[in-house]
Structure formats: structure tokens, C-alpha cells
Image (cartoon, rainbow, N blue to C red; front, side, top):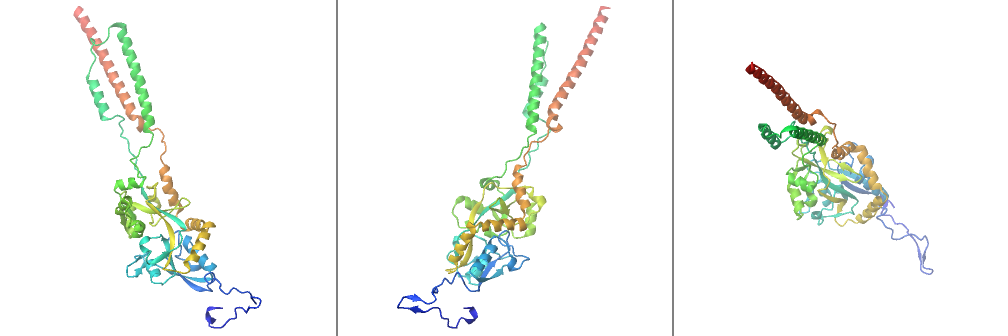
Length: 417
């Protein structure tokens, strides 16, 4: 029976009480939710990679984790899906109010305009009195890309001020003949002292060169606590990024909320990315990939690295109208899609075709760029400077001693004559 002739009588079966059987043996109480005979299933979403790729495509061509799952579900239960796309940049996800009204995607489902709404939504507890949630089918971790640690440039001089002060004190002092051991033992002592100082300076210079070739960086931001201690705000284009923890009483979540900055302007976000004063929210997806709500240029992403920890994570759901009779059927299909690996397949397809794998690889590789550099002149110029300075002083003293000896000899000859 079709929808246009549903008023006509249809003979389902004939019951014989004598032998207690049906003529046609039809199912008189079929599960009508499994076959809805082409009923229109209204779905609300918006373009958000990798969950829903809808811009520039017809509904039959929509891709992404959630759009693909809901389209396949609609086909399995014999419904005709109809998408309502929210293109309002100001409302986007929207919100639900106490008078049972709302705006954005959430407003469409609370006023029964659509059957389901979805776009990376979590089981947000404050919405439970107004809507119902499906089973969870995908994990989304909220983390940040933070400025990479800056290199600590070593000064050209290889010694600190304290060592230089000790050298100055040593140079001011002089060794008189009275302080020198007499005879052969004095020459032997001074020779051994010279050999020891040469060995010590060579060892120090070699170790110094090895240490100075290793890169040195300022303290990196690697954990959530590091981010909070740095005082740098984390930025996202919408307040929905803190919706899951907005009513939390956990101290760490309160600190994360206080450090959050919502900035919908794309131009300002681009300007923020060129400084080291902001961090930016990203979604950590399974399969070591990321979703970027902010379009950061490739030449800028090289200056960022991803946190090792998540600020928090949530399990994604589909939001339905309150007491939806079709929601249990959707739950069964979502669990089946997860078991078959279709959720992972659709996500990988969306990331590879419409995401930015280069940015994902870039922020992951930025944490592994600390390599040992080649030995350069700047690494050892301090030690060689001290060596050349000492040799120059020694040469001048040697010339002075020769001149002094010649002067004394000529003076003695003049006195004798």
C-alpha cells in the first residue's frame, strides 16, 4: 500500500478457526519502522569536514562520516531523505532555550522541523530535557596547536661572566722569581703545569663544541597544565567548543573555560596565527588525523605543534526530537556501521579527499625536528679566541723578554768597558 491510496481496504489474510491457521500466512503486525514506505526523513546539518561535506554537492553526493551514515540509514528503512542545510554563520549549531524554542541546528530539531540534526555534536547534558541522543559512534578529542618552542641562541662567547672574572683576576697576578721553585725542579714544575693546562683546555674545548652543536629550546608547551601556566588563550570560531564542559565543576575544566576565546572573524584568526600570542583549537580524530576549524596557511602551520594531551574529549551522537520512535532503529544501524568499520572508512575518505593531510603531518612532525647540527665556527670561536689571545700575549712577552735580555747585556758590556 502506497501513501496516495492508503484509504483503500486491503485483504491481509483469512483465519480458519477450525485448524487455527491463516490462508496466506502473512505477518499481520509488521515492524513498520523498518519499512517506512518512502516517508520523508528530514535531516539538518551544515558543512563541517570531515563529518559533513555538502558545499558544492547535491544531497546524493554528500560525503562525510555523519552524512554518509544517515543517508545509508534512510535507504535501509525505505525513507526519502531531505537535507536542511544551515548556512547561517552566526547561528551554526545554535542553542535551545527554556521556553522550548531555539536557533541554529538545535532549534530545528526542538521545534520538530526535522527528525534528526547532526554536526559533530556531543551528548550535551543541558539539552537532555528537550531532545534525545543516539548511541555514540565516534570519538572527538579537543586539543590545541601551540607555538613551537623557540631556539635558545647561544652567545658568541663561550664563557660566562663569572669565568671571565676569574680569568681577569688570574691575569692581574704575576709570578715573581721568588715564587718560582729554584733550579731544574722549577722548570719541570712549570712544564708539567703547562701540559696540564693544555690538556684541560683541549678537553674543555672538545666537550664545549659537542654540547654547543645540540639544539636548545625554551620550555615547550606539551600538556594542558603547560598551556594554562603559559597564560596563552586558546581560540576557536564558536563557543560550541566549550559546550560540553561549560557546566562542569572540575577545577581543570574551569581553568580551560577561562582561557578560551571565541573569535568568529576569519581575518582576525589569520592575524592571530602570525603571532605567538594565541593557540588554536583542533579536533584530534582517530587514525592520527586532525580536523581544523580554522584555515591556517601552510607557511604558518610550520610554527606550531600539537599538544600531547587533549583538553577534553567527547563521543559524538545524532540529536533527535524528544521521544522519537525511530531513534531506537537508528541506534541499531549506527552500532552496525561501527562494527563493520564503515565509520572509519567514511572518515578516512573525507580526510583524504576534502581535509588537509599536509597540516596534520606538519604539526605531528614539528615535534621531531630537533636534530644534531654540524659543527660550525661559531660553536668553537670562543675557545679559539682564548687560545689565540693567549698565544699573542705569550709572543709579546717573549719579544719583551728578548729585548730586555739584550738591553741588560748591552748595559753590562757598557759598564765593564
